[in-house]
Image (cartoon, rainbow over all chains, first blue to last red; front, side, top):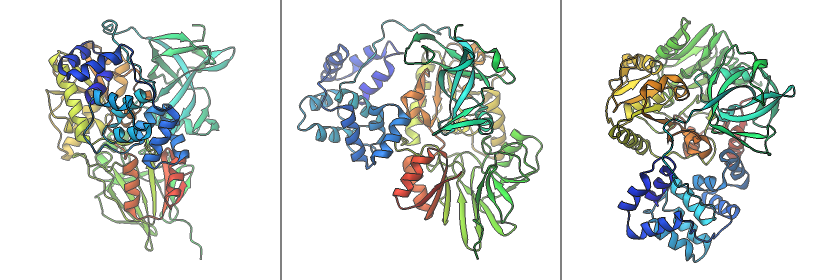
Length: 257
Length: 317
């Protein structure tokens, strides 16, 4: 499972990862891997909610703390993988894992036994296999060497200081429309958070609404329509480029551009 | 007689009425005690600064001409009616917890801290106290670090693979602390070149006697293809890195534990300068404090967790 976990992580970027894996892994794991990647997945043995509940019980974590952890991670299968204690046993192979999942004595006992032998990143793959949510991205072609990113200027409207995240917006019909939530990974992050503290207009739980004044340059790889967003579009792979001190918030790009 | 609490929480930051000083205040104050040199703890504009001797050079470098004094770790200083002392926090070189004592009552302010020793900065030492004020940046059970040596070995493997393919390895890391921890800890696979912002701090720490490997400041000269380049995170999005093409970029941070935080990044390594969930819990137990205030992070769930563990727990407001 350790090698297979590394393979799944490398697949989207490294076209050599799969051939190297297949040449250097056991016969049983090669067969299992090819079956998985061609879409033959094991039947799910537990729902995502049930599996997460079992992991929390195993880790001694109460429901309310599990809920906070899921909110922070944004992913139940990942939360379940991360809250468990470190492994104590030797890791099972991919074939052994799939065999256990297809012939479970009980789903609960099978998962507990496998969790105890896998590190967190491999537990995540296991959790996806066990809940029928495993998807692998096969490299169709060599990725372009450097995709030309597009940029836009947007204003900060919300701050989550605890997790260093900001929400930025564009003007539309005279008001700000949120366009992306971004990790605040700039060197001036501390100054920006300090500014936010003294320019907070409302609080929503951990989020602080701030006066729309600070402008940031955002890079993204494209857009895709999304009706669940107020803006109607979702930015692909948005990231914060830089803070533009002194930029006027009324000279932003608009949603139309 | 009811005495005022030893430390109080004010809009300017944590305040000690009996010593008339603030700890890591985020607005200008007459007297600031500062836990370490990161800019969200050592703010500009105070009339005077007191920190550890080891933290002082970087704080002066970042803040320019300031009235500042450095105390050796563990040395006690009487300020008004209280005694204060600084103790290693294991976060970055020179970082400290601040102990405040008045007539046998002891409070400790953790600042930022990391419980696992990293071989570069002064290792965290738990300080016995009645009341502990702790950060909780990673105060949720989803944050459990793997041993540092495993992560550093993984970074070395990434560096070696890039070098074999003729690609420079650019590792993004905060210029003070993480950058030096990485250069000191990663098993070398080639030369190390540094962004000027990283090299400025590296030179200061080297002059202080911290054991750091040789590094080369990048200033236009060609960088060998087998080099590791350590630079602040913002360079990954701008033109600075362009002359280093072809390169592979990596990012080392505790936040990399979460898939949602890895979007758009190439190689990620979960390596933090903060305590993880087991580290926070162990550190709090080791202080033997009965009352704990939490700050900086997942304060609400972490406070509730501590209360469920039997502590008198509150949030620094």
